Length: 303
Image 1 (cartoon, rainbow, N blue to C red):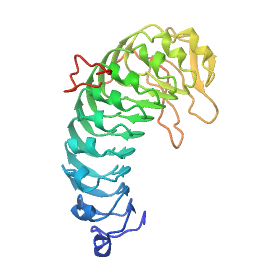
Image 2 (image 1 turned 90 degrees about the horizontal axis):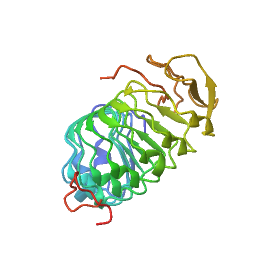
Image 3 (image 1 turned 120 degrees about the vertical axis):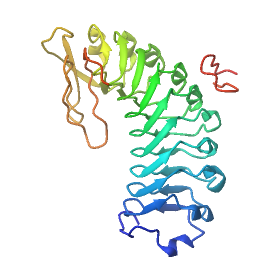
């Protein structure tokens, strides 16, 4: 029933249904709070994206919908903080809460939710650091945390998410250097977006170990020097020389991906329909474990 315009309210006949496992009411012009009657259904897939649903997420979502494997609530008007109960949805694989008005910190309880494949929390108002418990998400393939107010250094626990194909942390306030473990441990990465942060130092040559890398965006940070020459060995990219004091090389994906050019100014790129703009460039002007208690200062994955 996607794109069916029901008006501002959920139809009454839907609210009385029980034997429903898949409910797609995306882009249906629905407004109001998160529907409390959903717990009467046996949902595994819920898509209410692109509506005008507002208010907080229920704190007992795991108790009410324990069978959920897919939760799509992106492009709504949800606000408040992310409830810890999201971590108790043990079957959840795909969660999209992007393009809302959520704020506060990301819950630090992901050690019990290990089946995630996609997490999209982009374009909200989330703050604080990335919790080290994300290191337990060993099946995670796509992590979107871009366009928030996240701070701190990139947590070393992410090195254990070895299935990651897309890591988008752009347009936050991350600081420190680009960690070498990205190249050493995340060998499946195809897309890496770190643009518009406060990262400093140089581009580590370990990124050249990412043989599957197609899109890279490091623009608008405090990075110095240039793109390592070993980037020429990345088989997913095409290298060509460009003038400029920072780098001799430009990196451009294949014909099906956006063209990119490293420079000292804001790059321009044309994104594909399904992937974010990613540009391997450098700007001198910054934009803008298990653990019993998820201790960010002493995280040991083996415990």
